[in-house]
Length: 127
Ligand code: AMP
Image (cartoon, rainbow, N blue to C red):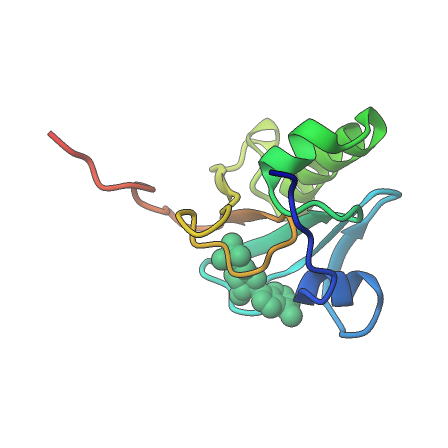
């Protein structure tokens, strides 16, 4: 089944300039902005400008130049927000929720870059 993109989602509205955002970085194919309800001292969302629902949609259907731009934008956000290991910082977590099981609220691909404090385990340890 093809991916179904709802162009009324809130990040599509941000990209169209219909609602404001606190931009951290804008590139040709990507936009990074502050999460409206931050869960840590650093909580930035990075989205592609193209209409992709989720990371698997993007990985399968985006053009190479979009993928390079998006990947580099995430790296740049890590540097800009002071969480990049390459700068001797303490690291971060990238999260990209997808669909019902992933509990994705906004159906436009976004990576959360979260850091600035110890984040604990992402999933409970079993066994
Ligand atoms: P997810 O559950 O992975 O889809 O996460 C959606 C994220 O979008 C949540 O962390 C929200 O706080 C965030 N969010 C929702 N609306 C906005 C907005 N207008 N500006 C910035 N972040 C938003």
